[in-house]
Length: 291
Image (cartoon, rainbow, N blue to C red; front, side, top):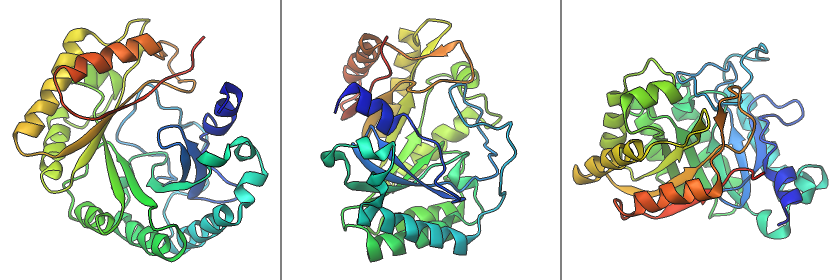
């Protein structure tokens, strides 16, 4: 895939498709395939305020609640649009090379934290049903979560539904210390609650840790911060948590904070090497745009 194709196909992650409210397609740079996203936060409310998040919270939302019949109609239609090839008749998807046109997943990822949605469990059940009916059998259900609500009964039930078939849970952990967490994720949620939820969930539902590292005022995370991050994960593993791997990546698109900028390839590689010396876990790296 050329750089021009890469920019066209995966940098456009707008969570919209025609007049759909909840469902949108993207080409995922991590999976190298098509991901059908489900936005369970059309109200754009999130319990994190990450400095790198590009969600436009100044424009009023078109809709504030999740209506399951509409979600079902949209997801069914989008699966058919992918299956028929109609998706690749228009840009930016027309530039997607053939090997990236496979359907990799249906992902719960939107304009906020998906697990805060009151009908999260029902939405997962709906997606699981349509996956079995329409999608290829290897299609995954993916949850991208900040882990703040993993202890809720409805969320646990949703994860158990996901476990019936191919699935991945991507648990965000961007920081190894509480001060860095407050600087990067800017949440009122207690940092220790997130660590507890990741550990408690990973004991019965293996997780992938997703971490975005970047420059703050031109400086990458310190060696001490990365060491602290590794120590957090080591504690989770030592206490019986099951971690399937690490997604280490950096900023790919413009951020609302001009002082938050991408790492260079060499900087991300250095972090990955530092982590590798402390954690024997598979790594997947996703680099940012290079100037």
